[in-house]
Length: 113
Image (tube, rainbow, N blue to C red; front, top):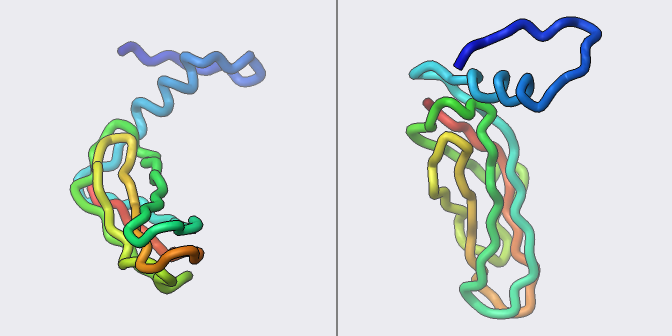
């Protein structure tokens, strides 16, 4: 891929944005942090809800993700878990422990590269 200069004041093309996104890459040992929040209505025990966390560093695949429940302790659901680590991000999900309730959990996440 060849890089070219985006001229100030010129129109921004999709190719310009794609170029920027594709070269954003976390070095080994880098991290991305943020917040997640899961909420859904449960009509059966074991119902699931999830969220996809997009990685800013589209050129690097995270090696791990850690999450906490500092903002919202698990309510009517199991402790959230993570899966599907790819260069685009990963999934955070949980399953309900009760029928006809609102399940929710939320907190901080850290993607490590």
